[in-house]
Image 1 (cartoon, rainbow, N blue to C red):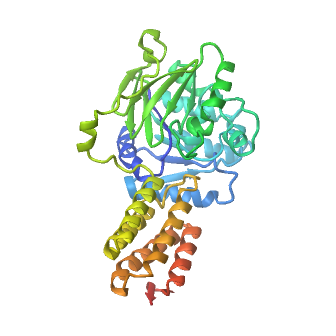
Image 2 (image 1 turned 120 degrees about the horizontal axis):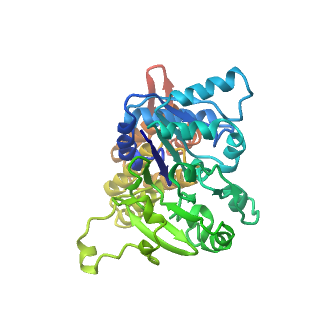
Image 3 (image 1 turned 60 degrees about the horizontal axis):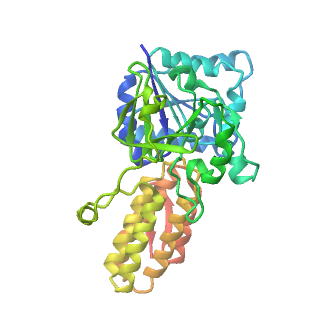
Amino acid sequence: MSGLLVIMGSGETAPTMVKPHREIFERCGDRPAVLLDTPYGFQENADDISAKAVKYFADSTGRRLSVVGWRSTPEPGLPRERALAALREAGWLFAGPGSPTYALRQWTDTEFPSVLAEALQTGKVVCFASAAALTLGSHTIPVYEIYKAGIDPHWVPGLNLFHQVTGLPAVLIPHYDNAEGGHHDTRFCYLGERRLSMLEPTLPADAFIIGIDEHTAALFDLATRTVRVIGNGGLTLRRAGVSQWWPAGTTLPFAAFTDGSSFAESSLPPAAPAEDQADADPPPLTSLAASTQETTARFDTCYESRDADGCVAAALDLEQALQDWIADTDVSDEREQARSALRQMLVRLGSFAGPDRFTPLVSALVDLRTSARTAKDWALSDSLRDVLSSSGVEIRDTPAGPSWSS
């Protein structure tokens, strides 16, 4: 029985992906689920990232994950055999954020790629997201080296596992529709069009790119040789600068990636007619950044009209968004932007909101601080304590839990 290879573009520990995760877990039944810590194993807070991911899956899906330690390649002998045994026993194997090139250094020329291939050949689920997803293709983008350190754009050899199990000679690019750059292009996993156009001609003649949008999963079913797109975005096939896009809800045969007759230039989803757009419900917010932008705009409108209750409601909604996204292991600066926006709201609220109106928000922020401490998000916990203190609210941590007074 062939397995299921899941590629996630991002959001692997975000509220947006809870429903896809629940569906995917149904595929592996009650077999053990393991989290592999390799991609972020170089980070000083690796233990915290693992703990947040384990809590996210326990809270959102009810599944208990065990962490398989492979932060650096285990030495031959008992530690390595224990890690390999845990991987072979699992019915669901997951790896996510971090550095793809660091992960490749730990996985290449070890038993690890063959363990993944064996898992897929025996009907198990392999779920790789973000950095881990980048490693599975024939070539990998060294994201940190190019985007953060300014190294010239280049490919590094990938595990080529995707080609091995699907027969498709593809490069996998998550974060395909990333828009964090604002005025500069950060699509295609922070490469942008200019740098991807430089790299694409250096791929082998038969290779192509499969891009997975953020908060989106592509489920490659090796038994039926089909891929199903779920989540909030879509999947892109790109060859020689020409792209075709399929939205969530689409199921494709693997042959769609190699059959030239099915390939159309710039096949993007058509915009809805203007009259339909006016009556349509607003799209769901798919990131903490989007929630921050929406609540800040609403707060500003209410502040200008001196609507204290509306301001408090907007601040409470942003607090809830921070609570919802607290388990997310994404390394972007969205959480800091949200904290900064919430601080500004509290400072401005203090100029005209009375104590009674402020009480529900303070209580919610104290609860959020408790959640942040539980999740070991010390930056958020300290930020909340400081902003509450500057607003005249004193928090006392007691054995029975936190209390506050103003």
